[in-house]
Amino acid sequence: MGISIYELAVLLVLFGFIIGICALVSVLRSEFTGYNKLIWLLVVLLVPVIGSLLYFFMGRKQRIQKG
Image: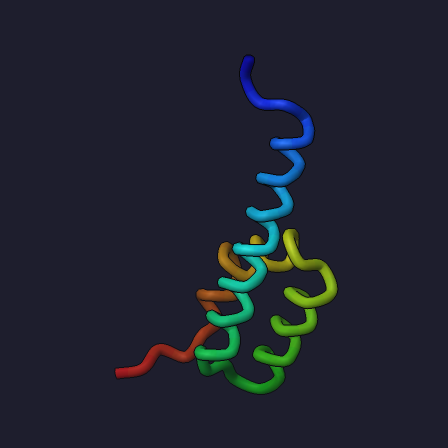
């Protein structure tokens, strides 16, 4: 009973995929100063899971606030 290693691996891969897509969409829809958008895109694409987590914890604060 419980969760097998295979099921855990599938859940982790799905989590990584979903968080990567969410980070890419967020970066593309946001405004940044200078080359920050390009840098975050490269980080999220080249190091998907860690880059996405870094973006959500650090990069979202760098966005230009509208209004």
